[in-house]
Structure formats: structure tokens, C-alpha cells
Amino acid sequence: MARNDHGPAGNARQPAAEPSSTTSRKRSAKAFWANLFVLSATLLLAFVAFELALRSTHYRYLTHPPSDIPPGYYVEDPELGVDLATNYPPATFRMRGPSSQVFTNQWGCFDHDAPVGDDYLLAIGDSSTWGYAELEDKWTTHLETLSGRRVLKCGVTGTGPRYQEIKARKTIAKVGVSPAIILVLYDRWNDFNDDVLFPDDVVVDGHRASTSKSLDLRTGSLTHHTRAEVEAEYRQYLQEQEAFSLTRYLTQQLTTAAMFRQAFDEVHAYVTREDGPILTEPAEVYLWTVDAARYPWVVEALEEHLDNVRALRRMAEEQGAELVLITDNLPNTDLHVRLREFLEEEIPYYIDVTEPIERAAHGQRTTYHHDGHWNALGNRLAGEIIHRYLVEAGLI
Image (cartoon, rainbow, N blue to C red; front, side):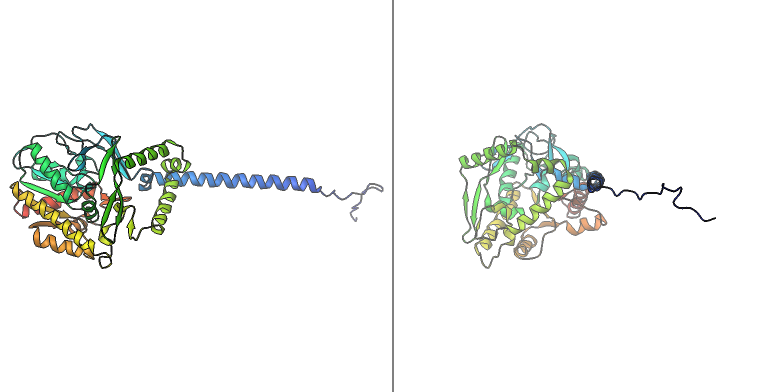
């Protein structure tokens, strides 16, 4: 029998009513907001997962300041400008790597107080001699352990040979005994600048501050801020730090934000870099890279810098000590060629530790990811290589 699609007479099915436009809009809006919520939640979870993943890597150190010396660690000195305070108690030093404890001994060196005999070694230099690592991890401590000889660790960050010669003399006078060996770890980039700018620093409210105002590349003329100007800039800096900054807060709390900030800063520094002739941030432009043909005074300044290294050698001779000068990854280009020739010709005990460290590292990283100083491995290998050099040279 054929199916009756209409049912009983007078009771035929009516087609379903079409939804109103208002109902359609409501359903569309609900779907939109639901999808937006799901998308937002997914993105948020992805961001949190990405942030947590980054915090388990070396990128977490980007939330740290490049260098955060505790207040009071430096004191003003009439000859040096600034020096390390004496008997400074342990305090936390933060950088873009693992934080460490820093302190000083009775002679104003980042070292423990311990007896000093007439066969001790005096280590001077800048930041790579001073620290950027726990005292037990420093190359000087490894050298001390391997040699069985006391190594007095008296590096001061941001200094060159001119400063270091005075620091060595003052330290030896305080100790009252001349060392058998004076070790100088030379910085291939900073030391030239540090000599040209010396004396440059003062202490304001316990913090080290630069007085350099500008450097004229045409003449080599250097101008300095007055003490009042330095203090005014410092007060302004403190006000900025005390005021809330969303950017600063995020870059201190979120590794992701710190990564974006670092990328921005690198691009900004490249775009706004100073090529002269007036440098308003003279410490941030390495004089090694300046065009010596265009600015010939730089060559004269380099020769004065080399004279300061000669003064280190003479000072060691006066003290009855041997001078050992150490470099790391010294370039063989531009003005560095003249430096390398000088060191090989005039410094009897000179070693560049670059290749020995690379061979001994077997591909492992020897510096921090976001800071050029040696990490624990780099320090250990440097101490071992310097010890081997001293033994082979018959110095210990």
C-alpha cells in the first residue's frame, strides 16, 4: 500500500518556521565569543608553557641585570679613582649568568684572608680576574690549588694596565712582601679604552659612576662631567628606578619579555651607534675599531697604552718578580696586530690561552650565553693551562 504522507484529511504537516534574524545573530555571537575564549585560552596556555620552558634554559638569565655590584663594594681612592673596599662582607652579585657571592679581604682584594709568604703570586687585571664567578670557581683559585702556592686575587673590573700598575704597587705595600710572580690577564677590548679614560670613576652613594662626558675622535680630547653633574644624573636614575615602569617590571619577571627587550636593544644600538667625531658614550665604542687613518691620534694613544704595559713589566722587575701576561682570543687584525707584535717581542712570559682552552673544552661552552666572561668550565681550563705554562717556563 502506498504510504500516506499527509495523514488524515485536514491535518497536513506544516513546514518548520525559519529562525528569526535576531536568533541567528545571537547564535553567531555566542559561537564567536566561545571560539574567541577557546583561542585565548589556548594562546595563554601556549604562552605559559613557552615561558616555563624558557625558564629552564639559559634564557632565564636575561631577566637579570648585566652587572649588579652591591652598594658599598667600591670606595673612592685618590690615585685610582675607585678601588675595592676592604673587609667587605659577602653579598650577592647578579649578572646574566648564575648569581654569586662577592666580598673582599683586608687588602681590598676579592679573596679570603690567608697567610702570604714570599713565594706568593699576585693576580691583577679587570673583570675576568676579579670574578663573574664564585671564588672557588675562579681561574686564580684553580691555579692556587694546582700550584700549591698562594695566589692573591686582586683584579678590579673595568680597569686597564695604567690602573693595574698602581693597584699592584699599593697592594704589595699593604702586604709588605713582594710576590714571586705577577699575573696580568689582559682584556682584548676594554683595556685600551680604560687606559685612555683613566681616571674615570667616582663613587656616588656607594655606587661606582663614570665621569666621562665625551671623546672627540678628531683630536682625542676627553671631557668629564663635574661631580655635581654625576650626582644629578644618579639622582635622576634613582627617581626613574623608583617610579613604576611596566616595561621594566615585565622584563624582570618574564623571560619572554626580556628576550624581546634584548632583541630591541640590539637593533636600537646598531641603528643609533656612534661613528664620531664626538662620542658621548666613549666607554661603549672600542677604540680598537676606530679608523686609525682617519683619526691618527688613536695610534699615538695605543703607543701610550703599550708604555703602560711596559710600566707593569718595570714594576715587576723592581719588586723582584716575574711578569706573566695572559690574553684570551686576541685578534690578529687592525690595531691588535701592533699589540700582538709588542707582546711577543717585549714581554718574555706571554701566553694566549684561546687555542689551548678550545682544544681542552672539546666543543663545550666556556663562556656564559649572555655574558662574555668565562663560566665555571672556562675558568677551570684557564687555571689548568696557565699552571702548565708556568711549570713549563720554570717559574714554579
